[in-house]
Image 1 (cartoon, rainbow over the protein chains, first blue to last red):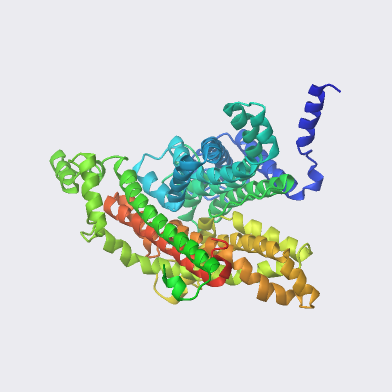
Image 2: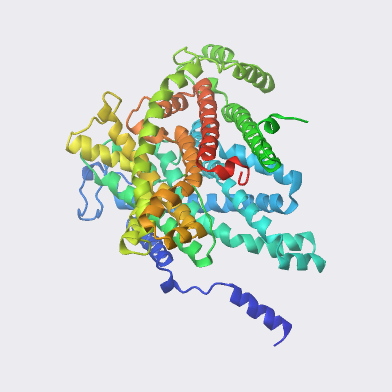
Length: 291
Length: 328
């Protein structure tokens, strides 16, 4: 075997081989996620008019012909709206997690690698930011800014990057002292190579776990803000807005509230299951607290 | 040199430990002050960088002269730095300006609503702890059993439910269908039940998860093996020995959760029209009552800092290792 082949072999072995049968949590999470995606895809393709109003068909109960989950006050199909809401929720959630992961991992790498005064300053800033309740910041800022999807994504990201810094820094502090890193440094690896070639791969797995757990909380934040009318509003569709809308006619039409809420809960559940499953898979202890 | 510690007859090791502990508490205090200062600045930034409230208040019903008058009244005709200066000077002695809606001092508006929110959070946390502690203990005692696994599934489901959705469904079931409980406001002790449930339900899984993890850590330690070999029952060990050890991370989490809840009850308070700090914030936000928003942000941050300090003290009482500086 050439040195290259040995290296490649080692690289392949270091990746956990994904045997879903041995990880029921992960499997269930993926199942729920893909189930929701399938429903949302079907809802978008088969029922094109999300938000199409038809007052002649208002308050149809679930299982009515042509309206599987019924219609709301204005005759809008609940399934179509829920499907659109699932897409929007996932879009926001993915965007927030990617933005905050990139920022948080970079800052965390710097804090852990450079240490000293850089570390102290970064961590104090993070401590201060973490102590302000996120929902309060969202509400205060969302009300004063014009609500829109990019605004909402930036706003949630402004808070969501903080846990990555803590996590990545703690991992780097441990990895920094390990043999392979000292060996790399001894053999003359540049700072860039140490940071991106060695430390980044080491922190990416726990960051992935954190990201999937966080995706669930972001879904809840987005829906909560949209529920208050401070997030996403028509013509874009949010599950939170739909629930708020349905709340006013709850005594006549429970289905307008129950179905989007259930869809939201299932999405969050899928994110948590996948996060938990990944955590078991890589045997990393990643804790995210609060919502 | 004789210091207080020498007079008290502390040995040199304890002396050193006490000093370390003192430094730790001092650092935590400084950190708290930093947080409050940060909150003051952040509250100014989010409300001032995001536009001029004078342009929005009153909608389109005002003439340009009236609008200019409002802008002058609110002080928005001055440069930002000057505004920041006078804001900081005011904040330093508790003056956050007056609410333009009621004419009352903003701080008083927030502080009047605070007790209601504290009451609500207290009930929710109490309920969550009362449910979470036994569930976590049972799931550790019978770990791997069907009961443990099913409780984990139930907890995961409960953690995924949006609190505002729970709140709405509760209103529909208990107020509209069964008319057992009042739907909104704070008119009688029964009014507390539904908001408490809506807040506590998502908290329970978080608590169970943390306690279970902490208990499992403790149960793996040597002293537990010793106790077991001495013939103590598992139930006794978990309830009397392990739980106290597991309380240390739990109390810290509890303080953080309560701090977050201070600002996080907004949605539930709005749904139940609960006269607390969340409703005040929501009102202020909808009306762009900047002074009230700023005061609320600062009050919540202060509450958070105080809670964390309280948690530090409680942890010291629970765990003598912290007191001796062995594990700050």
